Length: 361
Ligand code: EPS
Image (cartoon, rainbow, N blue to C red):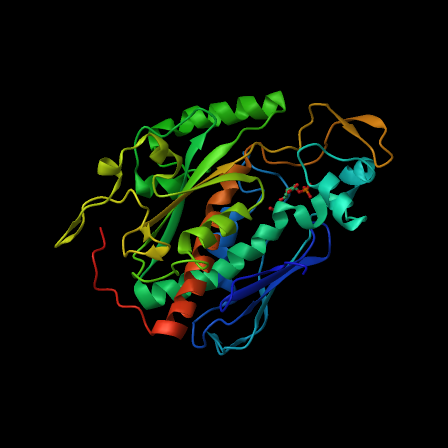
């Protein structure tokens, strides 16, 4: 009942708190034979990590993965893969004044209501620090999908506040600190984020993720719908308040004649569905988007109460992201990869290896 485990056959359990000695995960059900070494986690963990640009939290963690089990001679053995990342730059004194105070917008109030006790340091278990291990597990899931189907799962930031990219240059995404696909707008974003940080405020963001190629057939018609599992997985990321699959909320203003994707002998004519029909992948790119709320930890004062119900004014010190959405790109990719890997193994269990030769536009 404690819900720290995710997935059915590709099953990930995470553990640890933001200011504990370490965070970690156990991946049970990863197929044997996948080539993996500690350094293979570095790229995605660095994309997610704090302290890599002035536009994210300045907590500096090496985020170095130790493989404790399940890998021998550089390959997964089919036994549980246990991964550990040590916390080395937690500054718990920043949280001394918050031990008995509920920070508005955070999980403090609800954790206290549920458990009657909480590790308040750095948000404890509710901290985005935990997402390190989702990304680490996602590296294995991405590898499995890439090896079997050549799948690439890639995300980018599609909106920060009112700012939207004017064009999409895939190569630009990894060349700026915002995962932003329009290189011409990066100076404007830098200025926007600098001004925001100086003002002490934060801003929301939209992140989009595409997985392609994905074989047709992943998912189930009713209770194991691929889109339902993607929505749950993406919504489980800290600060996510909305999820879209395919055209998402834009379908409200669409007509059926425009939304349905015609099927031609050579493939689908469009992809409003986001690569999923009736809960099952169609072979088209799987497209998802998430909306992330603005960070709640601000040095601007806000009204709250303490654990005795007395009114207090809260100003959060410490090191925080002015836009958590920026670092959510690799996290969202990881969650999409984990769902697809799990759905692939479940499909294989019931139906055998999926075939790739289908419409894939
Ligand atoms: C976080 C608050 C900050 C971030 C942290 C997430 O931590 P602290 O207050 O301990 O400096 O740095 O993010 C990470 C450390 C990470 O690796 O993502 C929060 O409140 O969620």
